[in-house]
Image (cartoon, rainbow, N blue to C red):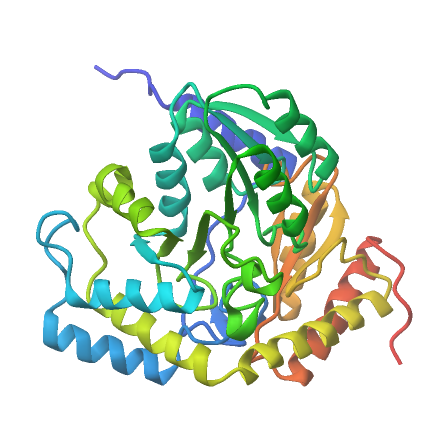
Length: 401
């Protein structure tokens, strides 16, 4: 006897996405993550990775991973609080703390886990969160998990943030002011000096997610706190090991007591097996490169300026970006996905992004430059992006010379 599929409603939802032009399938990366990669059997200029500094396949990181695996094995065997804390994990945390100029650091299995686990651990339902409207999904989920009262201010609206804090000025509960350092969809930088000043004025905890500024902004890629000279004034710094560092994981930095508290109460830390030895070992190798090869960061910014200038000269809108994250604004979600598909066929891989990841009417194709793209690759990518956009009527680029 057959029965109805209780998950049939999911198929109906997928059909709606197909009809709306927002359905996608996973593309298969068939080489290392390189400036030109083989994806779905096609050689394309890869502008769809977070591998800002080209470290994901750097020989030093590969060598460190292999040596650690041969010495310590493929896995750690347990969560950190049982027997899964290896010397490599502790060495990496000490290294990151020194790099970020803080007392202590704890590494999580992912940046998402770092954000969600931290916010949910330190607040109660009685407390208050003041959050930028465009904060990352991991921050949003952490806020929800904490069950604290959430007060959202318009994107980068200092006056709006102060209005929320002022209304809570006489409340005894804890207040957390939280923002991305660099916003992942638009590539703009958070107004951190003003927000830090507000946190100090109203006695709020200041938390910054530096995922997309780690390895990108600040001295040798130390992030937005260093970029703005805010050392000692930010209570919680979150970063990632999965983007510019080129490996996997997230980390949280702060005082020794704060990190000890997370050891005891951050649920992703408590209930997830620790990284295999290859991960901290290759991350340590990455920090060696960050500290000893500042030219990588300089090259990243030089490439960014070149690529974005080329797009703008062709009449494409790159929105409000201030970083290597380069959105090409389209508007309609179906058009953005179609633009991405046609770019792939032309030899450029850049991701279409639409609602609900970004607001309705603000769909875009997002490209991310790395330090390892050659000028010729970036020029060619910009040319193809302008040509395809022009043929689709997304913009009216200047004719190619």
